[in-house]
Image 1 (cartoon, protein in one colour):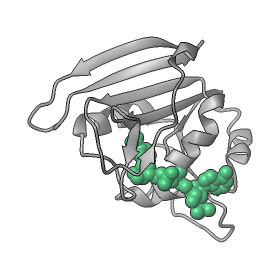
Image 2 (spheres, rainbow, N blue to C red):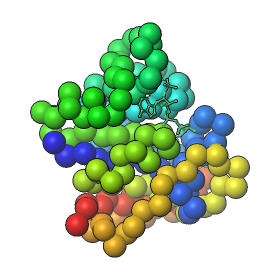
Image 3 (tube, rainbow, N blue to C red):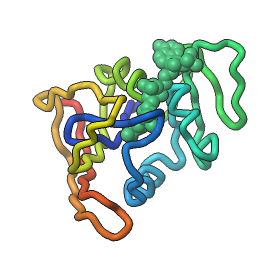
Image 4 (spheres, rainbow, N blue to C red):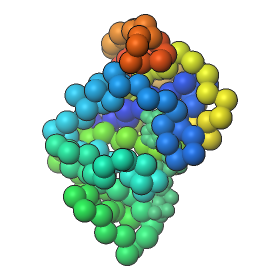
Length: 163
Ligand SMILES: NC(=O)c1ccc[n+]([C@@H]2O[C@H](COP(=O)([O-])OP(=O)(O)OC[C@H]3O[C@@H](n4cnc5c(N)ncnc54)[C@H](OP(=O)(O)O)[C@@H]3O)[C@@H](O)[C@H]2O)c1
């Protein structure tokens, strides 16, 4: 199984504020959908709560929570990341989609990073991606786009593999 993280971060590793995303970047939402569709996505319970329409369609949704009573329509709840990864061992690629608590626990076990770098700073952010030691990663892809009428900031889609 390839374990991948997909995340959108600002210049200072910002990734969320008040339980929501930093900004609305439709090009990134489309990219996220294209990369993750047909695969399993694993998320923390707070990230699940932030989804506007519940479980993500066309993907197997796994939510990590310590609440043994939690039941979610169209998603499977697992009590820990380790338990989820054992259950998902037979999958080709599993996408960890957040949030900050989950990324912090999984970054060192991750094989691939799909980073959207938003070329802006977000001073009100309250959720941050953990520091990345880029000497441990090889860049395998990068595309940069300017801001436009729909996307308020310039951004880059960057793909990295662990060396
Ligand atoms: N920029 C991006 O690409 C991106 C992506 C995803 C999320 N976000 C943002 O990130 C923020 C949410 O991140 P967050 O760090 O606050 O929350 P989170 O990581 O999404 O979820 C935290 C919750 O996950 C569960 N959990 C975490 N570790 C666990 C473990 N080891 N075992 C069992 N359960 C565990 C707990 O749920 P219970 O409390 O139910 O036990 C915990 O409260 C939001 O602002 C969201 O919009 C941004």
